[in-house]
Length: 223
Image (tube, rainbow, N blue to C red):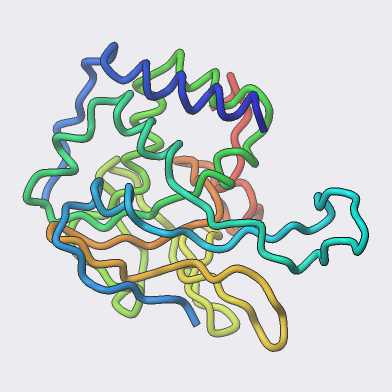
């Protein structure tokens, strides 16, 4: 975790070094209230899903329950990556944009070496970030087909077991039945768009119906 924190700091410091800016920008899940801020500023203030201790609780007496809340997830890595790619100005513009926002935990779950590799390839990092941006203000309820992204590629839509999926990632992930698990916010309204929180990082071109998990994996040097 300490190493991952250092990577996040490195991303933030690296932001001023890149001049790559794409020209293609255009036009029981928890629903958040409207915020008078753009999507970037909203992400800075947004509370992500809860983080449970699971098996990582410290040894003590009495022991910490696996279902005990450890804290709330944040979006520091995503914001740092946006800064590294010089996309803050674009995403702070009129838009509107719909952002599929992976949490810090989603980035931390990527294979070892992924973030470091992306730091060295800003065009590739930008491609991944813009793959998480849909032109327009699209609510979860309005997603009923494949979604074209600012990246130029298309996210594959699927509706299964009363869940909405894009490239295999659930939009508005929430506990099913009696399960006690995190609720991922959707329809978080900003003054220039909408935010849906993801538990995974999506990779352009990786998803397929025969290998649905591929859209959420990345191997450094193989993209």
